[in-house]
Length: 255
Image (cartoon, rainbow, N blue to C red; front, side):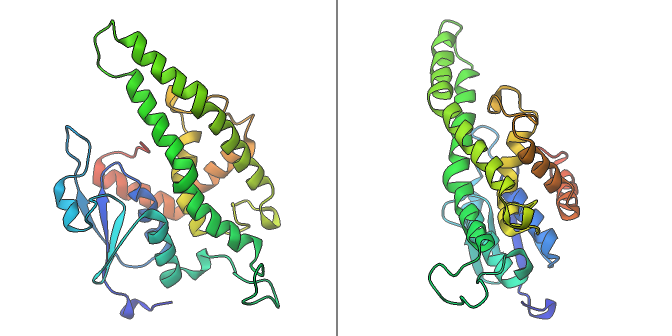
């Protein structure tokens, strides 16, 4: 773990209303010095302005610079920062006496690696499709076209989104129930980088989102998931990050 005197300059390139929220929380949790460079979205397209492409060719967020190194993609950013500045946010890798052996990893570590990939690889694509379907339904089209856009949106939700949401949130409820040593986090008793990664989709779906959220997801049907969301929101570093977001954007919104 690097000492403060050895830590190169860390800059979070902040894109408003983006998943940079998780990286800001992580930086607060790590307690390392960092700077924030704010990037705006195009008011017409909602895409990042071209200036962000000078940081990374794809012009997307989150992206950080550590010294002269640019690191993009949420999971890689979280893994890199945890490895160098927050090893306590990574579960112990090996079972006793199993160091370096195939299948010698602890359950907590394997969950940590899994949820790093699951978050953006499996869950977030569903949420993006849900947002697109909702935008189709509410698109500003002539009144005689609205039944068509509503039908398209409804078919996407009923035929694709809802069955997948049911499966995924039942899975997360089970994962929280079976977490190592009783949880309450996904990988065991302690907060990990994987929890910070998962915070964005979990907080979105457990918030009051009206018709943007998956149907049938309530505190009664998924008590562990909602309790987990509340636990994340009570984290002091999370609260500090929210305060900084309010200072940056004037308010805190998930999407």
